[in-house]
Image (tube, rainbow, N blue to C red; front, side, top):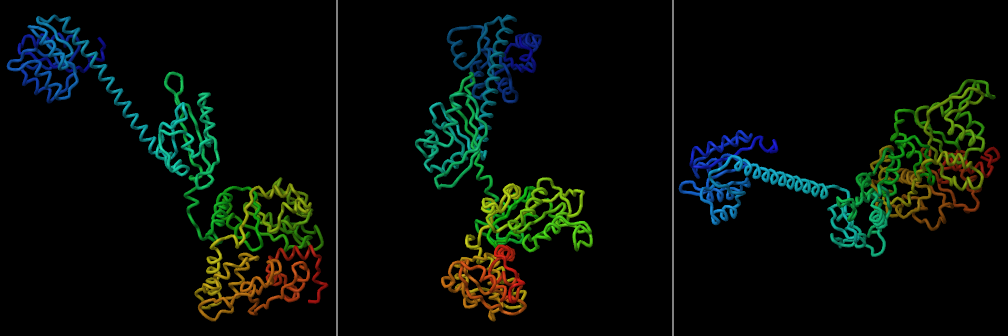
Length: 602
C-alpha cells in the first residue's frame, strides 16, 4: 500500500465487543495506520465524530439500541465524506442495500479475517485519497479561475476572447468601456464587427484572422483609429492564440492598451503659467508639454513663430527644464551684431588676430560651455557664418579667430527665427544641411490670435505689472475694451499687447482702462487695412508719449522704415516699436533694402 496513505491515517473502530475492537486495532496499527480510535457504542462514536475527523470508519452493524446504519446516517448529516465499512454477523440483501444506499463503501462478514479487513480498508482509503486529491484539484482550479476572473476584471487593459467564428466570447470591464466609446450598444456574445462599430472593417480584424489561420502570436504593435466622436486614438495591440490543451486552438485572446489615455493625466492638467510663459489655451498646453518633453534631451531645437510670440521665453523654459539649468544660458541676437563682428562674438578671438583685437576674447559659445546657447534670428546670418556654425554643430569643436588649436565644448544649441527657413533653403539663402542640423526638433509658437482666451489672461498680467511699476491704482479693464482687444488680429502678438497695455496704463487716470484709451487701430481696425500696413501708437519712451505714424502703403516698406527712423531720431529699437516689428526684423529689412542711416537726414 502507498506509504503516504498510511501516515497520519486516523481510523475510528466502533464495536460493542471489546476483543474485536482491540483485534482490529492491532491489525491496523501493524499495517502502519494510526491513530486508531475505539468506540464501544453509538453515543461514544458520535462524541468522537464531534471532536475529531477520520479518514475511515469501521462499524459493527449492531450497536446496542442503535445500528451501524444510524451511525452512517449521522456521518452524512455531519457532511463527513470519509468512507464507512460495515461489519455484520448476519448479512442479508436488505441490510446490504441499506448500507450502500446511505453511502457505505462496503461491508464485511464476521468472523472477520485479517487480510479481508486490511484489503477492504486499503481500497476504501485509496478511494478516499483520490476523492480528496480530486476535491483539492477542483478547489485549486476554482481558486485559480476566481483569481483569473478577478484579474480579468480589474486590469486597465482591454481583454477580449474571440472564438473561431469571430464572435466575442468574453470581455472585461475595461474592454466594455473602451469599445463603448466606439459603439455604445456593445455587448458580449456579439460579432467582432459589432464590437468595432462597423460592419466591414475593424482596426484589429486582420490580426485576428491571421492568428486564427497560423496559430502564431502577433506581438505588440500600434494602430491609429478614430472612435465614434472622431477622436484619434492610438492603441497597442497583442493577439495570442487560445490553446485548447491538445495542440490546437479554438480562438484568440486580444489585449488592447489605449496609449492615448496614458497621456491623459498630464494633458488634463490645465496650466495658466509655465515658467515665465503665460496662457491656458489648448495651443499653449501643447507647447508646454512639448517643452517639458524636449527639455530633458540635448537635441538641437528650432523655435519658429511670428515676431512677438515669445521665442525667448520658450528658450528659457527649455533651459530650465533641462539638466543644464544650473549652467549658463547665453543669448545671441544674430541681427543685432554687425556681420563682420558676429564670428568673433560667437567663437572669440586671439589678441592681435585683427585690427582692434587688443586682447584675447572668450566667445559666446565658450561662455555657454555646459549650458545652452540661444541663437535668435538665425535665418539672417551670412553664408560664411552658416558654414562655420554647421561645422561646430557637427564636431562640437571650434577655432577662435586667429587661433590654430581647436576648443571642444558641451553646448546645447537652440535657434529661433520668425522667417520661413524652409523657404529660405528653397531660395538658396540658407544651407539645407544646417537647417536640418538646427531642426532636430521644432517647436512652433502659435500667434496670439490663435490662442483662445489668452488675450484676457495676458492683458490682466501686463496691467498688474505696469500698474505696480507706475504706482497707479488701476485694477481692471472694462468689458468693452476687453472685447475690442479680443477681436483684434494682433500682428505684433504678445509684444504688441504688452505695449498696448503699457500705453493705456500711462494714459489712464482712473481705476479702469476704458476702450477710449486703446490705440486707434484697435478701435477701428478696418481703417488701417491689412496688418502689414498698420502703424500703431506705441508706449511712452523716457516719459514722453510717442504719437502714431501715419499708415504708409504696404507695398512701400522702405518709406515706412525711413519714416519710423526719422521719427525715432535714428533709434532702431524705438523705430522697431513704432513699426510694430521685432528689432531683429528691422535689422534684416535694413540689410535687404540697403538702407544706410548715414545717408538719412536724421
